[in-house]
Image 1: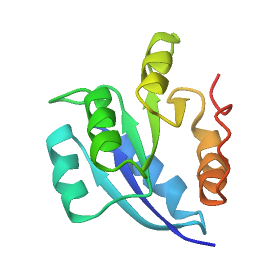
Image 2 (image 1 turned 30 degrees about the horizontal axis):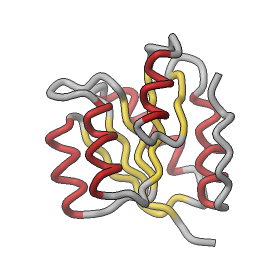
Image 3 (image 1 turned 90 degrees about the vertical axis):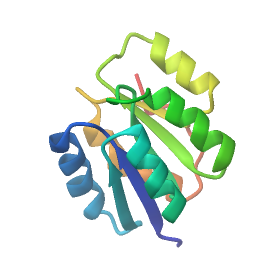
Image 4 (image 1 turned 60 degrees about the vertical axis):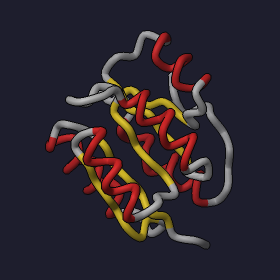
Length: 131
């Protein structure tokens, strides 16, 4: 089984810390990278290509949706999981149209992240782990 490199992008340190803690418990995850803004993510991406990126929609400098576009254009093999507190369906639809593999409601679905990462590692393409 291959081990994953995961990039976490969120402007709130508490969320990044929580995601890093969750991901570090998984045998499937080898390396966890993090960034707190769009610009910082570009620096990280230049140094290391992640297998999976967890992207918050609201970043301080540009949208996580802009980052989704960038990743899908330049790193098409990277699987993208969007995370947001804004779960009204509009963002999910937009993100999926732009190539996001999954959409997680940050307020309620953190417990789904380990099984989602495991399914990505095993090659599963199910997209039903969001509301």
